[in-house]
Length: 310
Ligand code: BTN
Image (cartoon, rainbow, N blue to C red; front, side):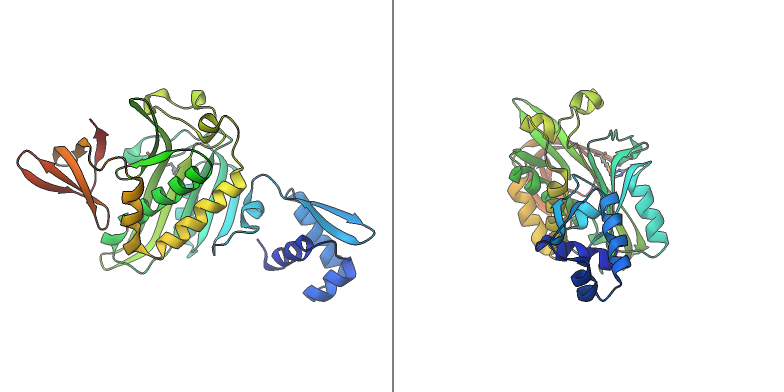
């Protein structure tokens, strides 16, 4: 959001304030104040104008300005009602040199998942990609995927949903013997071996969507289905971004947080890797995100693959 617009909102949030006072506080003309107020109304902010001046009545349910407003993390948010893929858009922004930008959408028409799969993204979800430029070697980047899983799991738990993480980054909810997928994460990056240029962490959260509208083979669930009522997408997105921001600054602390929510550790697993299948008991995770598996023949450390709980 534009800096002055941000300051207008902050001033309005503190109570009714007259146009001339606002103009003086922000060092802009009265007609500029009016233009900012109109622009904010267009974005869905309800701003009353009474005898005491302008007052903020309500913040929109979702959108770029809504998420940026009150966000305690240094991201700007580019919002789309509908976009092919927030990851694709974030990659374009990366090519333009942007950083610390979140691309957020209500709907994706060409959402992409891991292993070149499609990712169904109907209206009502929280489909977002965080673009940033960490000062780390490429080999460390997987830790940000784990960080994203932790961030969403924490936000989901705060929203009353008992989510856990299946290695490496599926956020799931248990229903008896079945685990249903709530969130998927797709990380993309570019750089040299010794230094990442940019990372895009794409997070797909089945928020206020009906799982019946999602492909059944993925055994999906949603925040709506788990809670029995819609989640406040604005507050939820802010929590995810704030948690993710804190975790990305502390890559070494991510694994401990991940272990806290992991449903994979202590379980028998089968992991399909690019070089074959590894089966055994998952005993730990290693920086930057590899799974340690005790097999019949010894210990194997798997850095990527499709994991199945047995
Ligand atoms: C998976 O296969 O589990 C990962 C799914 C990742 C989906 C998200 S939605 C936001 C971002 N944009 C995309 O096109 N994909 C990711």
